[in-house]
Image 1 (cartoon, one colour):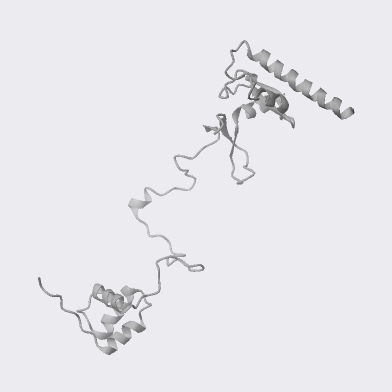
Image 2 (cartoon, one colour):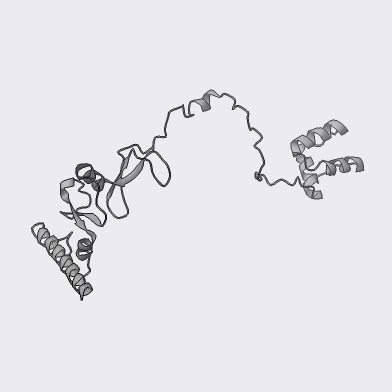
Amino acid sequence: MTKRTSIPYSDAELAWIEKHKTLVRREAHKKFVKKFGRTDVSLKNYNALCKRKGWMTGRTGQFIKGQESHNKGKKMPYNPNSARHQFKKGNKPHNTKHAGHERISVDGYIEVSINETNPHTGFERRYVLKHRHLWEKQNGPIPEGMCLKSLDGNKLNTDPSNWELIDRGTLAVLNQRNAHNYNDAPAEVKPALLTLAKLKHRASQIEKDNKTDE
């Protein structure tokens, strides 16, 4: 195996390299070769010497706070191949969720994207519960303390006729652990369970009112 011969450098050359260690290596190497006529020293040789001596540039390759990009203000050169894949003004990604797009929420309800500003993000569209959106378009806003209950127990059935406006107290009765499972009950039994829940909640309210009057 042939032994690699080391490249000799004069003291003046070493002093110059150390002094200019913070320059970009390619630029420093080019200046070094021009100044000393060292065509025998490649960029690879130059880099290796700096590493052996510990003459680092001090750069990590990361942008620091306040540092400007080298191509700031420069126009990207035209390339026909890349131009074919660039977005044109007005174009949108293929996966853009337009108004009317639907998805299923974590609670199992259908959500629909509508043309209404999102109060949290300021985006031009936002997702709302579809059954509630359709019901309010037909019946008006849901009063405070009230909510909608699916009559057939199917959250995916967003027809307004399938949703009844009830107070949250009645919904709490329906959701009690020891109550009948409304959503899984036979269709003919559901109306009776809903009426029973309303009566229980009303009775609870009357009981509380009587205690308050005592």
